[in-house]
Structure formats: C-alpha cells, structure tokens
Amino acid sequence: MATDLGVDVEVLKREIKKTYASVSQEPQRDFVFPTGRAWAEDLDYPAELARVPEGAVESFAGVANPFSLGRLKPGEQVLDLGCGAGTDSLIAAQMVGSEGSVAGIDMTAEMLEKARAAAVELGAENVEFVEGEVERLPFADMSFDVVISNGVIDLVPDKDAVFSEIHRVLRPGGRIQIADVTIQQPVSDEGKRDIDLWTG
Ligand SMILES: C[S@@+](CC[C@H](N)C(=O)[O-])C[C@H]1O[C@@H](n2cnc3c(N)ncnc32)[C@H](O)[C@@H]1O
Image (tube, rainbow, N blue to C red; front, top):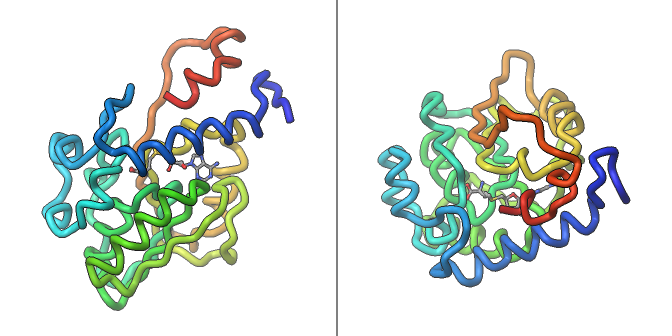
C-alpha cells in the first residue's frame, strides 16, 4: 500500500526485515551503519552492557544511547520498541530487577531469536520478546512506566500511529527515552521514495 510519502509500506517493511535479518545472521559484515559492542561502548553505554551476551550485542544496531536520558528504576515496567537482538532490553532488565519487567517488540523474527537466546544465557526471567509491529502494539492500555527505543521510529512512515500507540500503552506520568535519527532539511519526493535511504 502506497502512503502519501509515495513509499509502498509493504515493500519497505520487506526490505527492512531483509536488512535486519542480515544484521542478526551476518553480524561481522560491514553495514552502512555501525553495529556491535565497540559501537555501544563508543556511545557510553552503562556498565550493564558488560553482562549482555555476545549473541545480542554483536547485532546491536542502535543510533545512540537511550540510557543517557536517565537510568531505569527498580520495579519499572518497560517496553522496548523495535528491540532488535535485545541489547537495550537486556540492559533494561538488569536495571529494573526482578520486581520490574521488560517487553521487547520487533517485526524481524531473526532478531527476536537472538534476543530470546541471549535472555536465556543471561538468566533474565523478567524479559519477554514479542513479534509484532510498533504501529499496532499488542499490549493493553496503560501497561508500561517507560517506553525506550533506539533507531526504529525513523524507519516507520506512519509516525503518528507509533506515538499514538506509545501514548495509549503508557501509564499516566509515564515517560519515553528514545534515541533516533531526525532530519533538519526537507527531503525531496524522490528521496522519500528511495527505499535504500529508509533502510540505511
Ligand atoms: C536499527 S535496528 C535497531 C534495533 C535495536 N533497537 C538496537 O538498538 O539494536 C531497527 C529495528 O527496528 C525493527 N523495526 C523496524 N520497523 C519496525 C516496525 N514497524 N515494527 C516493529 N519493528 C520494526 C527492525 O526489525 C530492526 O530490528
């Protein structure tokens, strides 16, 4: 289905899934964006990064550090939008502890497989990974204290749907800690139709 941006959403999602399936399955490849543990360390990730299993961190593909906006508190219930291979979710799981919980959602099955394996390796029982789309969250109204996300909303044409869903699932007084790419210049119509610009 074409959007008013001129991009076919189904084609875009297929290409995004292909790109991030490669990030999960061929983590050593050179992508047009930085990935892996060294990149997370460059971003000054918190000490909890050290305990995140390699299977997750090698496929880390965030754009910045959502924890630079503040640590999560013990007992909080957290949603990680577009969790990928689970690095941020597993850091969040350590911060909120056994009284808290984390749900990571992503549409790329290969990423979720790695995230689930890493959670088992870490022994994190307070985290679950769900396959789904961030424009239609399979969670009840007012079920989270915090929504975190890293490098995901820039990939979604219908940003209003994402923010409306975030608003719906957050409890009153809840907060967002989002790391993402923004653009300061208008993008040409041709640029908006270029799938490679979206996925990269
Ligand atoms: C740049 S990666 C970031 C992954 C993770 N947040 C991290 O920091 O490593 C973007 C992720 O967003 C997911 N994604 C993109 N669009 C999505 C959508 N509409 N619904 C759910 N997941 C989506 C992709 O599958 C991919 O895993």
